[in-house]
Length: 440
Image (cartoon, rainbow, N blue to C red; front, side, top):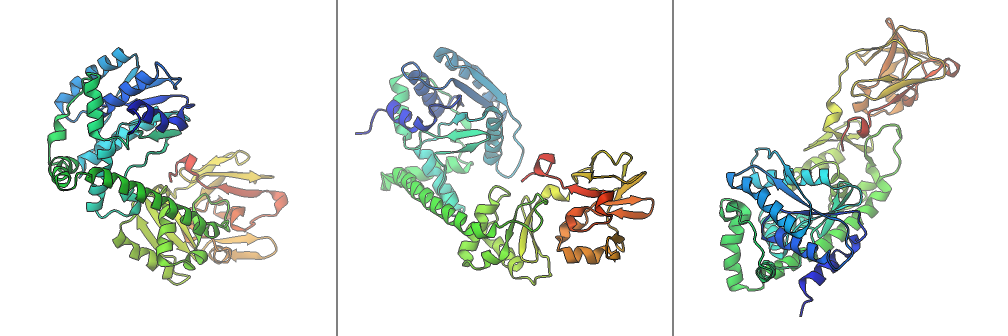
């Protein structure tokens, strides 16, 4: 016989008992109402972090306008503070997904460092998620369905009811005479999840009574399998993550040679793991672009366009360029006081180490045909020098060049080029970082 629901919940939340705060996602529906009541009741007998509830108002239907007052009354009766947040749901192909994205974005604004957002998804939700993703052709990660916990902002998202059935939640609610909101949209079978819930699962459980429990258990198995694939990816990426020849360049990159030694399946697994925090992952049909990039000739510099940026190949290295990398202006920038650092719009910072030349100075970008004076080598063609340095092509157009009038005075030292002797000062470029606006 299973332990009582409060004991199971307390055990599941054990790893986060010392968190600074627990926030409860409270829609007012059955699941979150039971979760809120359980935690508020446990707080009377157990030492728990401070509790608060968060109600997200999506503004998608007129009936929802009455829900905040209901949620406030419930929270007042339990002595739990409530915060109501109104969100804008962006229109798109999937209203369900857009509402979810808006909701979780709001959650990230609430959760502080080390804090926990607790949500009420249960075992039936897990089974529905698995079947829904299976029908969409998801891979192992998608079929692992909802994780019991994951990082969220600086804290954690925890789903402590994933081993609890909807029937158990209903029994608890009736036993404690709880009142909850019935969302009218939950009966609309035009939404995929509602269709599964009202049309598909009743037929499945009629034939296979344990279908929900078995599907949820399958999601657990797939989650374990994904964990093993992640461990394999970390091992395979160790050699590929050797330092870049350009450590000043703040872009993720991998050595291609070590990736080539893996089977195609392990290459895809490693790249999925590496790309996951950078972009939405490609579906199976788009992986042909990876093979084209991988197998191109060394001087081809191919690229693979993904949802949130591009993967570029330069020689035997691949580089990730977020979409914001292309938001760059090559307009000239005056530098009236070269003794002070110069902020370049969307392109980082320039500064002199040592003595700065007299002004007036201006920063320009490559047009072609530039000639630069290199100590000990005389006048040299800049394009040829850049080729010698191996500087990736996607950086060259952003390389700031220092002019006085029409004279090219200096090129940043990071390219291995010294346009002036060290005692006269060296020009250093600190390219744009994610803190300065690039996001990955």
